[in-house]
Length: 324
Image 1 (tube, rainbow, N blue to C red):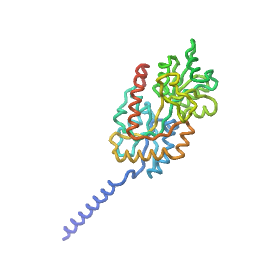
Image 2 (tube, one colour):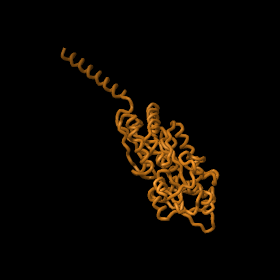
Image 3 (spheres, one colour):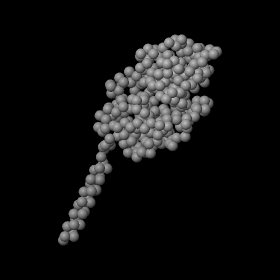
Image 4 (tube, rainbow, N blue to C red):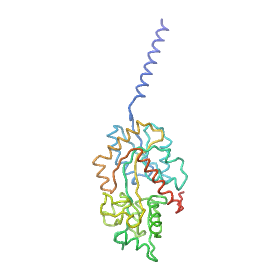
């Protein structure tokens, strides 16, 4: 009798264990904090946008959103950490054009951006702006191109680093416009903008976030925008392609996860980004910095990444750009 009682007690405990396991397994996503890896140092453009989304995503998903900065190797260290993460939706990447499209064109990376990361949604599109110091003799893009082509004109074009989108944009401008601007790389947007103030560079392609403070202070001026058509961000600014046919340059920022991330989690995260991007406070932040808030479907983000690889691959090859 005693043995039977023990047996029945054991069965009861086992059943309870299965019941608890079933309840735990059925917990709706998300049930604990989500880590979003930013593959750059704190304070940069990618980090600023990710942190602007942190609070609205926390409110929408009802779980803490933890931003982790894992910089290095052109953004590929942070991206690779997500590639190798458990595809459960609790480790995600806030990526951009660099580690998710163009870095792999210039150096070996331990993952394939087109297949090893699963796109979830865009969050922001930022055109590249052609910027010059406020005292530049060029009043508009046409004058600048003529100025840059003059015999003996030695103009330096800055970038935020070798292999960056600002660097590739400079190479593309030289190729399409027939200019010979001298590329000067800097270690980030802040040092590059400081170089404007010091007169070390005479032109650069900048994002709205990098250039907005000095532009509003009257220290630099924008001559043109990298989008193929005029943008509502700065409707009076002409596209670079008006004077340099075929030129286009813009960057995106968005959310990605490991490639085996389940469809239902992708859907929930996509819905959350769509809702967060619509928040008035996020819309205002973007407007203040001349960037465009824009969510997307996962398929649309995948298409953007493929298009960038196709666009910048020939530029990298022709200019023989290599990253250490």
